[in-house]
Length: 483
Image 1 (cartoon, one colour):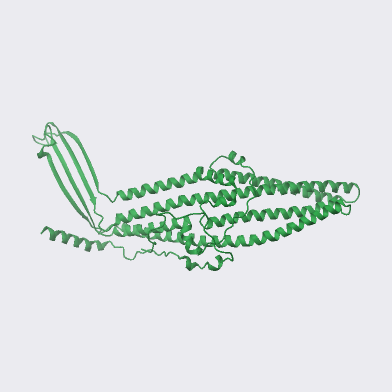
Image 2 (cartoon, helix red, strand yellow; image 1 turned 120 degrees about the vertical axis):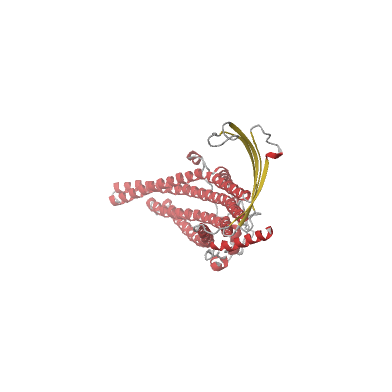
């Protein structure tokens, strides 16, 4: 008879639970596949495919000081400490979700004393002070019939994995930012060299022009033009100094140090662009070589498990409780057999009416999943376009550098000829100074383009994952799909 009663109760639970339903609530987001974004033409290049960037890619730039700065930044940057703290926080949350799946057991005890008035409680209870001693043990277990708590735990693990990958992504970002700031510092020093040379040239030109005016060869118009060139050169020196100060400050921030640390950074050596070619099958393989994509996929996976957990809340659940206790009054022995009692408390919860709480919760989880999918899709679109844009940038910069190199060589030859003419007494010194101005402008443009080449090559390395290599547990076990 008892078995029939239990079966009837469970059957009634299924029927009554239909009053609170998740029907009509589904997420709308769909994950993009790299093949659907059509990046083949943009990523096609004539050179042979290469391997993905190495974990210590910066060593390929051949500058030991840069390597030391990156190592320092990876050790002391506060953003990395924050990323590590977020990992520990996520680990604690997944640990709490795992603990929520297990039974609980508590013990306790105490002594209570009370004086009951005889006018309310007749003897022997009333009219005197009495004590009661008690001790108990309490066992509770939510059976989690449908696995809702397991889904919540797996969602927490997904968030933990995302935080762990985010911490590795932060290190990649720090390394590339240090390299780019280092390149900018070197370029600023190059700008300063050109500005100083131009200032010397413009001052020599101004002095010579004044001599020619005194001799009646030129007039005040030429003097004012020469003064303008001197002022412009002084301004360029100030601009270059500001660029040096900014780059040093940025490096100090990346190193996690005060501004004086930046002042101690010497002039960098001239870096050459890293030889970066397109690895084979970039669109598909990028999913495993970009830390931000892996982290975004984990967040989709976690959101999917959150939906599963929220759906299980619409189903009936069974829990089990056991209470064992010892109670004795006055001087009675607490551990006597007569002081013992125990009870078993199986319970069934039936979600019949909750004012829409469960539906609102599930709707929020659906929206969270759609947001995670949208962020993943946006990260994927951005990653492919970053790679394509950086590749195109390197191609065009290569062409610009070659053209500017020819212009620089021609300007150098023109200046050499003007010097020969001046020394032979055919040309004037002023003519040579004017030709030198064109040479300095060509040199300024050339060093700027070369700095851009190195900067874009570093950006391409970052776009290709910055040396990220998936480790065991980095990738979701199964591809996240719409629940």
